[in-house]
Length: 456
Image 1 (cartoon, helix red, strand yellow):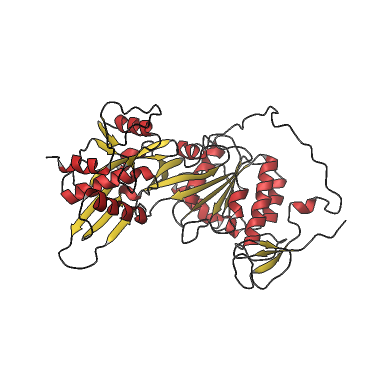
Image 2 (cartoon, rainbow, N blue to C red):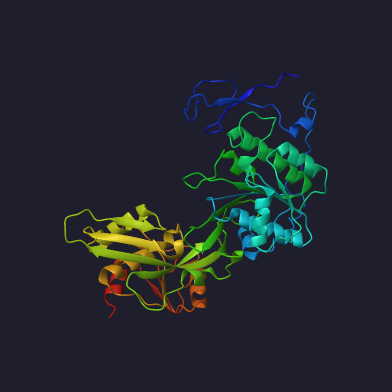
C-alpha cells in the first residue's frame, strides 16, 4: 500500500497543502504551514495498513425513524434547539466572555442528571472547585453531575470508554483541549479540528449529546477553524450585554430543526431564568406616549418578538458635522433610510444629529424594521408621539415604496395578543395575508409622514 502523503495545514486560515511553502497560498500569511498528524487518537485504533472496507449503499426511499428528542429541563433552551436534545448530536455554543455560557450549560446538565440521565461536565478552563462553587451559588450542588477538570482528549475518551456512555457531555471549552497525537499548542487550528473530530466521533458512536463551548473573536465569530462549524450539527450563539439583564440563545445552524430560533433568558442572582414572554420584557416602561418611540414586531425564527425602537433628532444651529449614532441596528441601513426620507419625503435631516436605539440592548437584522425606524424618526423630528397601541413593520425601498414582508399575519396576531389595536404596514401581497381589522396599509413612505404629521 502506498505511503500516506504528508499534509500541511495553515495555522491562520486552516487551508491544506500537500507540500510545505513559506507563504500560505490562500491567506498570504508567512511561516504558518505546519505538518498535520497522519492519524488521530480515534483513527489509531483502526488498521490503516490494510485496504479500505466496501461501502454498503442504501436507497433514498428507505424507511427511517425520526430522532427522539429529550427535554433538557429548560423550555427556552429546547426551543432554540428546535424541540430538545437529539442523542448523538454535536452542539457548538459560542458567546462573549462572562455572558453566562458555563452557567447555562451547568443548569442544563443538572436538569439532565436529575431526570435520570448521566451528565458529564469537563472543564478545561476552571478547576473542579470553581465549578462546584458556582453550582452551590445556583442551588445545584445536589445534582448528580460527574465533574472533571481535564484538557487531554486521550484521557477524556479513555475514561468515557470505560464507563456507560453519558446522555450529555459538556466540554468547556474546545479551545483548551489538546491531543498528544497532534503537534501544536491548544487552540491552534490543527488541535481544535483534531480534538473536535475525536469528541464528535465518540458522540456519534455512543449516542451521546455533545456540547462544545467555543471562544469568540473580537467580531463575535467563533475562534478556530471555520471547518469546526461544519463538523457539528448545531451552532448556537449566546448573546447579550453585560449591562442588560436579558440573554438570547440563538440557533445559527441546525440539522435537526429550524434556524434563527431563539430562547430568551434573564440573568438573576440564582442563575439564568427563562423568559416565557420576551415581548413584555422589551416593552416594559412604555406607560406614557413619547415622541420618537415605535414598536416593531420582529420575527426570530418562528417566534414574533415585539421590541421598542427609539429615535432622537437634534437640530444643529452651527455648521458642525452632524452625528449619526445607532445601537442595535445596521448603521448603513440607517443612512439609507435617512436619505430616502430626505429625497422622497422632503424632510430636512442633513443638518440634524440622529440617534437610534433598540431598547433592551436587542439587535435587529430584520429588513421589516425599516418602517418602524422611519416612524420613530418622523415622530422625533415632528415631536409628535405615535399611538401607544400601534405597531409598525415593512421594508422601505430606495424609491420610497413600502414593500411586503414575510409573516405579516403572525406579527399582527402577536401584537393583538399583547393588547395592540392598530398595525401599520405594507399592502397585502395577495398570498392569503389579508390586512384584517385595525390594519392600515401604507403604500409609500410619504403616507407615513402624512399620517404622523397630521396627528393632533
